[in-house]
Structure formats: structure tokens, C-alpha cells
Amino acid sequence: MSAVMTAAVMNQTARLTLEKRPVPAAGAGDVLVKVAYVGVCGSDMALFENGYIGDSVVTAPMVLGHEASGVVVALGGGVTSLAVGDRVALEPGVPCGACDFCREGLYNLCPEVFFWASLPATEGALQEYVRHPAAWCHRLPDSVSLLEGALIEPLSVGFHAVRQAGPGVGDRALVLGAGCVGLLTTLTLRAAGVRDVMVADLMPNRLELAEGLGGHPLDADGLDRLDKEVAAAPSAAPRYVFETAGNAVTMDRAISLCRPGGTVSFVGYTKSGRADLNVNLLIDKELTVRTVFRYRGCYPPAIAAVASGAIPADRVVSNVFPFDQAQAAIEHAIRAKANVTKCVIAVDPEWEIQA
Image 1: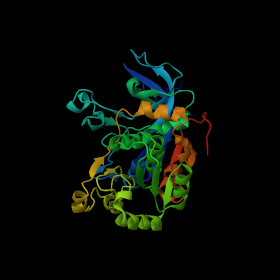
Image 2: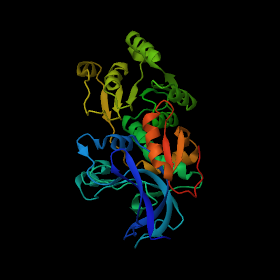
Image 3: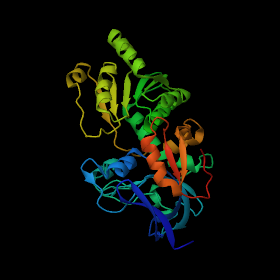
């Protein structure tokens, strides 16, 4: 193994440079992973395009990417749970393990969590090798590809959203937004036995894919028709509504579209961090509001769901770019939304690139 590797480094807004860096050494409890695939997330796009998210501003060279899979190539001291050659999905958040939230099992809420490419952390997965604690590297069964392994991270967001809301067999749900997380939430709802999953979006290509995944597509006109149906027969409205687009307008609309006594789940962030919501209607309908911050304990069951075929996660992938086109991959994800559902970067050229 070479002592140096290539990393895609953002030294300035909207510009990645392929740079040579030392290959990190696996410390006690760590493994060294040769990265295979990295998904392009909405947070990567925001950091790349704007140089900030909310009040957090990029002030140092940064490696983007937190949706990653790879192959273990070296073990640190004391690691017995993995072996060299194991294929893994890497859970990007490493909590402190000692705070009240970690002790209560709410490790995604740990205030000291180190999460790849999430400020103030500037280290991400868009590089040839990463060092990561073995405890947060999840072995992939043979039936799960490395491409699917990189999708376990966004799938876990949808998985956590569905778990938090708690729909059951025979329920009716609405997903607002058919981007990657919305589509993966749709797949999770279908796998959970939800009989009717409506999926709303403005992009025809996304609605077409949503329909192919078992959802009932709704364009703007369809959503307006649903509004009228809900007003005429409130008991027929979806009991569970998931807002995954991070749009202030659809957040408010989620309240009006949800069945009285139902549950609204906010999954997406708004650009400003704020939304004007009809709180009176929220109260009048006695809705339960759930919010979703990343995930906890979702990687093992999400991997099992993909392995069983219950969730064909790879179907949300629209584009795979080679590592030397990482700049083009993120630009395409930002500028070609009418044709993109999920862009993935194949970091290791030895892995087959799937389109």
C-alpha cells in the first residue's frame, strides 16, 4: 500500500482539488478502509455551492462526503469485530459515548458527536482511504453491493423517520418531496406494509421513479386535488405525512393535508432554518409532530432490509461519476435537478462503475 493517497479537497467555495495526503494509520479500535463509493448529499451541495450551512461557515480546507462504503484493508489494535477484506458501510457520526444522550441510547443527539463533513468537522469520506472506529463500520453481506452500502446512510434517515412516526400495515401516508431521502422513505414505508404511499414533487422524472418504486405520484395538480379531497372528507386524509423537501411552504401544507389525529414528520431542513406554520390548525387537528435528526440504531436493520430485497435502495441512483470527476459530480447534482435523484462518486477505480 502506498503511503500517500488522493483526496478531493475544497480549498475555496465551489472548487475541489485532487491533492495528495498521507494515508492515515489505524489506531486502537480503528480500521483503515479503502473507500469504494461516496454519495453526494444535500449538505455537501450546500457547503460546496455556498461555503456555509446556516450559521456554520467553511474557514479551512474541507473534504466533503459522509455517505460511504469501502473495504477494510488494515486493523488497529484490539479490533476483533472485522477482518481485512470485509466490505463495510461506514456510519459517519462518532458520538462521545459518555454524555447523558449517549447513555440513554440517543447517540444522534450527542453534542460532542464527530460527524464527517459537518461543520466544525472538515474531514469527510471523499478520499481514497479513511480511518474510522470499527464500531461504526457495518459489515455488508454478500447480497448487498458496495454501491448499496453507500446508500445505507440516506436510507437510515428515511428508516428513522418511519420508525419515529410508527405507521403500520394498512395505513395511508404522504411523502412531500421525491428526492433521494423522500424516495428512500417511500421504499421504507412500502416495506413496512403501508398500503398507499402518495409521493408529491414538481419534477416529472422523480415522480416517474416514485411510481416505479410503488408510490402513487402527485404533481402540483394532484396535490391540489388531494387538498380538496381532504377538505371534503378529513377521515380519508393520510394519517402520516413526511416532509422531506425542506421547503417552508410544504411544511405548512403538511399540516393541512394530514388526517386529524395523525402525525406530521419534518425530515428536511429549510434554507433559512425557519418556516411559517399554521399552529392553530395543528392544534385543532391534534396532530403529533415528529422531527428527524439523522438516525440512531438504523444501520443494521437498514442493511438487512436491503439484503433481503425488501428495499431496492440502488434504484434511486441516477448517476455514478469516477473520482477524478468529483467536481463535475457535485455540479451536476446541483444544476441538473430535473434529471437527478442521486449522484454517487466511485472513489476506487477498481470497482465497477454502474450508471
